[in-house]
Amino acid sequence: MSLPQGIDFRATSGYVTDPADHTYEISITANYPRTTAQGNNVGWETTSDSRNRSTSPDARIAGIHRTTGTTVTTYRIDLPATGDYKIRLAAGDYSYSAGIKVEIFDTTTSLGIIADTSTTASQRFRDATDAEHTAANWPANNASVTKTFASTILRAKVGDTAGGGGVIACLYVEAASTTHTAAYPDSATPVDTQTATLITATALGESATALDAISAALVTSAAYAETAATADAYTATLVVAGQSEYSDTATALDAITAALVTSTAWADAAVPVDSIAAALVAQSAYADSAAPADSYDATLVSGGTSSYADQATPVDAYTAVFIARADYADACTAQDLYAGALAGEADPALRQSIYLRLADQAPFVRLSDQSPIAKL
Amino acid sequence: MAVPYTRLQALKLLLQIERNLNGLQFDFRANATTWKAAAQAQSIPRATLEAQMNSAAAAYQARLGWLGTLQANGAVWSVVADLWTTIGGTGAEFTDLMTPFNAVADGLGPADKGTYAKIITVCNQILATIDVPPSLWPE
Image (cartoon, rainbow over all chains, first blue to last red; front, side, top):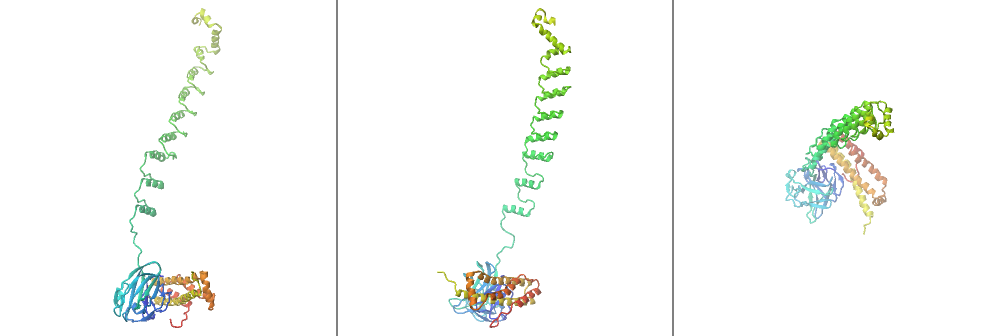
């Protein structure tokens, strides 16, 4: 079904030629439903009477359908949809003045009487606002009325139960334009901007917030654009340098770690002390768990001419002295100190005998009658 | 008290079916004749004529659909069918009538109406498919 649809009431189809969007109605018996050439289902639901009047005026008002007395007859036009429709009307008789009453219904609900005043003479027609026009004037000057339909059935009831009959020459219906075709005029809200950005997939046009910068950086993997925080500096340094794939939550200590990592193959959880250990490692193949004391060891090791590898102790310092001066390899003891005093006696057994000699004689006896110093 | 469904209501329905289907046969031919004349005279823009023909196709289908809806109501249709058989009618008669009607209604919308000549062809096909309905007086 599609509108507009004009119905020209008369007695025979070929009496005149209907204009575009119009068709004739010649049935005087109930003939709903009939499908017009315009594609709409229309028709009388009750009986009426018809006349051809004149081919002189506009074809739309060349004839009539009518009721007499208190009879009311109903004409139905099926609408394509609910909504607003403009209605035009020619209620009158080219040949006589006539009683007029046309009421519009939305299925069974009255939408009002659109014409209710008898015409004053022949060749007079009431329009949809009950204004009277001459036959010559009606085509260009008839006014429409807009009605809102909650159903898809338009009924036009012609006649008056109070008497006087009713006449209709032309009924015309078209859709009233209610849709907006222009751009959407509502007042945009901030949310709309964001929505538009998402839809267009172009550069972000809204007022960016700090979070947006982070999002953008993550998305594009381009330069970091947010207001950087101090912690970010460490992060950036580690990342930008590209020397490691250090991606944890960086801390200040990590800067030191990075330095350590870059200079040696030191890969444990570095601590400040390790800097010393690293120095030790760098100078020699010293690989044990270094301790501060090792500094002494290192000195011993590095200054010595032999490979001393035991668990060195401070006493060893003395020992090392002895070692350096002689080819003395036994497990020296403190007494070696005395033995050392006789260093000129190379024979250890002799030094021991000297020791024993002192022992088999009461050292104090010998010493008592002799000055030990003299004996010696 | 519920109103019983009787042959009285069935008679009304049968008469409505008669008006609907006989009227449809008349409208098929009347509208095809009108469209053919308009296409031959090119008195209506082709696109407008095509739109009107497509609207009529939808209107025809709506009218045929009412009968299908009624037939789907078993309780009501059984009384209508009973009344139909009482006057000597058969189910096959409905089928024989509905077949060409459905063919015209269903084929009109998709038919090629791209030129005035094609519109005339479509109209001639309708006129060849649907016979003139019998009438006591000239219609």
